[in-house]
Image (cartoon, rainbow, N blue to C red; front, side, top):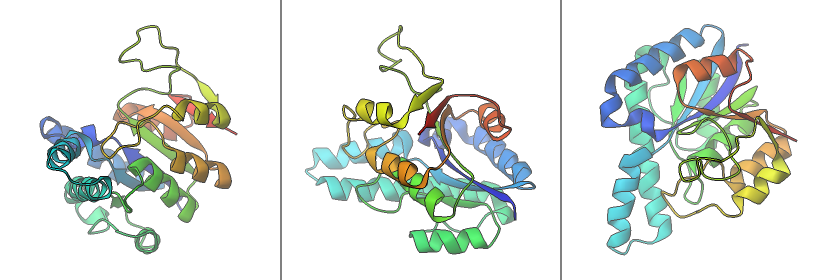
Amino acid sequence: MKKRFVIKLSGRVFSMDETKKLKDYATFFVKKSKTHQPIIVAGGGKIARYFISHARSSGADESTLDELGIEISRLNAKLLIYALKDKAYPHPPTTLAEVKNAVDSGLIVVAGGLHPGQSTNGTAALIAEKIKAEEFLNATDVDGIYDSDPNKNKKAKKFARIDIKDLRNLLVHEDSMAGGYDLMDIVALKVIERSKIQTRIIDAEIKTIENALNGKHVGTEIIQ
């Protein structure tokens, strides 16, 4: 059986100005599928935040906004499925049970969100647990975990490794509203901890993902 890895792929990858790059990701995942089985969870990105912002200003509640974000992430997943062609499971699974069945097909699986109240990070961690993945990669807009927001603090310190308990303390201050930026959330962290899932936070560049899968030390490793 091929080694399975779950990757949460930043919504940025699916933005309108990244059309060609999405094909490059598809080429990479097809190549990687010769030795590994990729299970990809698409983030919602700017498009999801745009829709959520509009709906919130119209008075929609948070669970409704979550559902809207899930729909957008599934549309993003479909874009990658189309690029992967016959190498991919033909549609985004919508439940954990369906994810399991899709993975058992042996094809590349691309999902979006599953349940309101969960970020796509939480969803990816649950999927990694469900299918007993070898590794969970959270491919984001930053190259790892810092002691403060590197976009706001130029002196922010990046962790090569971080203990899961220390990360939990950092997460207490994170914004959990629908569409909020989250490096990792409490749901994801609990799943990683209880099933001891090997997890790494990296930037979403193809070369970085390849290096991580080849065992090179990139990004931030969560240790426990």
